[in-house]
Length: 346
Image (cartoon, rainbow, N blue to C red; front, side, top):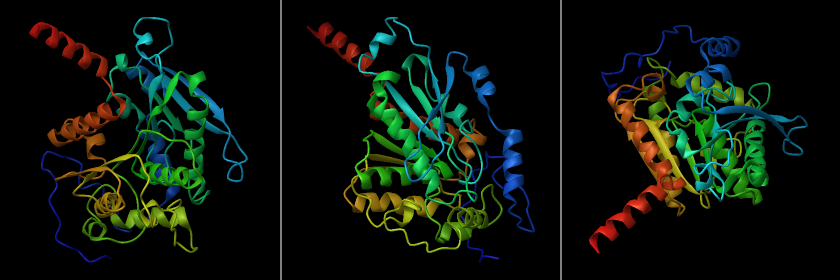
């Protein structure tokens, strides 16, 4: 058992921060997937909460040499019309390219998506895209990163047909999906792939190596340090883990220059904290732009599981503010307000 370090306390407003007891430390991936299947969001539940949006599943090609099978890409969007509201986006709509969590070993394209959709108003006309990437251990890294990259390529290459703006795509990953979002970003940089406007890494799983935070939260919380170790073992297998380009493990990348604006959200009370902080520091070291938020008292997934806790609300507002800036949401309204004020001063 890992050494117990003193650790920062959970925010007392949270009820589920301590997680569930698992004294024998079993890591049964089949049971983890079954548990997510019971509790998961699906297309029907998203549609019930967001009836304004339509859902389409597309079969898109994988990256040659990585996958010979098509990949399912889910799209959620407002029905297209010629209304004045639609004409506000003559250059195409913005996209949140959502990469689901689940430790890279579980989950599907709908997991966590409802929460992200809820961050936006329908009149903002965002398109939400989410790929069904291959899971470990059946498919070791970098298979899933290539699937995520394939979705990004498809969105950019088919932007006109999809009525989206390729310069307003946010690559948005949560937890294990953030690992893949970061790796897909590094893959795109490596091979001269498509550009996009921002990389959001929400409570990211970025590095297989040990850290103080992993030891501090080795147990007694939702995603425990030892679970992180087991998940990375499933993703990487027994081979050499050196990964200078970061396509398998983004945190091991030797160079983090050349990325778009990066936004990182992490709780102070979770095992992945230190690797997230280190990633942001290295983006800065390599001349990039990163916005890092380390939230006191927050456990892994706290903002999703307990969204009404004050610090969870502040996390959502802060992330929403970043997305507003990079996507230019509300610019027309702000410009109109500015013109009206200027006119009133004349």
